[in-house]
Image 1 (cartoon, rainbow, N blue to C red):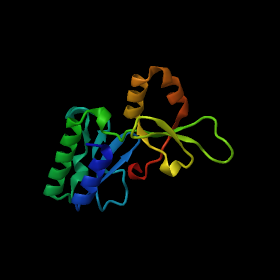
Image 2 (cartoon, helix red, strand yellow):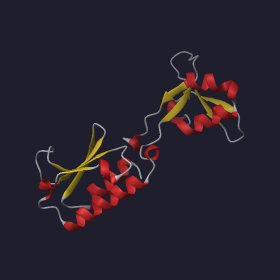
Image 3 (cartoon, helix red, strand yellow):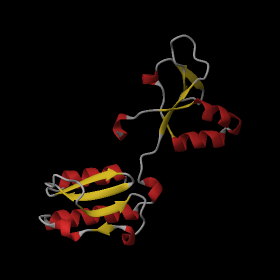
Image 4 (cartoon, rainbow, N blue to C red):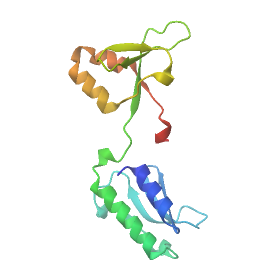
Length: 159
């Protein structure tokens, strides 16, 4: 489970709990609190066990029992997820270094395994970090070029 997914589940399926991520922590609050300093659970996003999760049960008033159970279930699912899988994988386009004119040139890998140019980033293929690592492993001579051409792709789904 990804951190973003956990937040969406908690915020979408509970009526009395609000989850937020900030500064490397996942915080659970009573939904109607106006001040978000009063969390009842604070979880470092890279935690691997319950011992590292802080609780402040004084801030638990007016939390519905089923909402608390849902939060605990989601936290357990996060703990069961390896840390590296909790975050969206970075995505990149491969931008050809020698741009000509006002066009940006991007490299795509077609269905035949041949590299082709795209002059519009809208149509440029987006590669995940692991896909690029596999490309470098399969083509070690191209690894430096792939590293030089990586351009972060802003994926609207991850925002």
